[in-house]
Image (cartoon, rainbow, N blue to C red; front, side, top):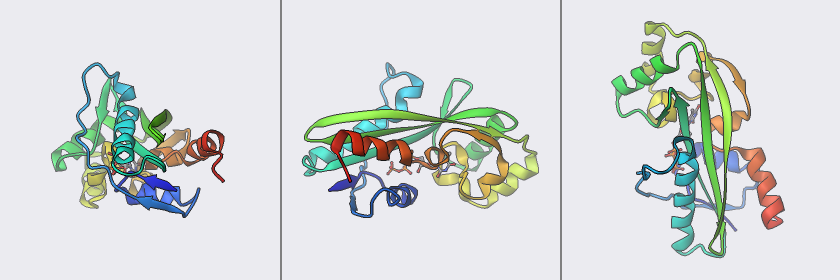
Length: 187
Ligand SMILES: Cc1cn([C@H]2C[C@H](O)[C@@H](COP(=O)(O)OP(=O)(O)OP(=O)(O)O)O2)c(=O)[nH]c1=O
């Protein structure tokens, strides 16, 4: 069986493109990362941590999948905004330029972990202060890395993307599907 170590409704929906035969067991882990982990490796590091945590808690024989998404710009990683002001600062930082969205993904079975990072480049239009304010008022930024959701009204902020769209939403489905087939002969 496949176990998705995630509380994200988006990851649940995306995994169902691969299979509907899976169980959800969210991994409520401490998301602090040691300083020696390179910035852009942080999502993958946390994905491994989430998947191993669930695997070790009664799902050793299953294929456990963990994921984590971060937005990278100016040598910084943007997670979920803590409040309105945080969301505003993130959106101002992303305005008029390109950033990277990296989703780390990990599969674990019988104590063996395999992981990868998928990178999508996203370019935003120049955003006016009122546009940022209106977008924050939708409430959409608050549970999302980088304070936007490309799958919702956040789509209106996006000029261009290069890479897997679903990776931005939180699960690189096509790469994951290929890994499940290749590494676990999953049908
Ligand atoms: C950039 C971007 C992020 N996101 C989401 C994907 C992730 O769910 C979220 C980043 O938070 P994560 O910490 O990666 O995941 P999560 O807390 O939602 O779920 P869990 O740890 O239980 O697996 O931001 C979008 O939905 N759309 C977007 O365009």
